[in-house]
Image 1: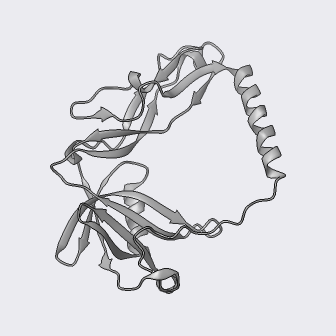
Image 2: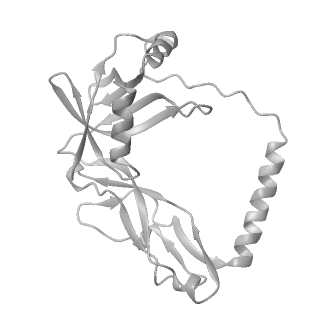
Length: 218
């Protein structure tokens, strides 16, 4: 599959204070986890945003270029400021092109369920991504799920997802992906969820702090 290129640099500044200064300069602290351990790196905010626009919601392999070194990786996780939405820290997972890897792949739903179109039901999507095991060269951008034949009262599980050569589903086969339910049932569930949310909202909120990256040096 197509790879996305991202330039990174080795990072010599550690700790929350140093990372804060980097962010003010338009640089995002990051870590690359690999077989040999963790490497502290940094990436320019503009470069990372450009990469994210190119990647979109699809699963993608990322070639990390650090000087003359190139590492194949997956975007493993990212921390963002809840107020400004700015990226605070990024985790990349190095992968071996010749060894199986675990990756999260988004689901792409196509078609209109017959249960919605003709039977008065509503579509309830339970999962929008699944974990798979595959070689990097077999990583799909997404997994297409055709829901056209889904009738009222029917459910699609992970075991019903399309099979592809070289891909094994890591998510439990019994996990629900999507269902076609009665509109009354969906409305009732939504009301219960709203009541629970309202009850939770009355409790005092805990102060949120940014998690310290595992590979940061003291």
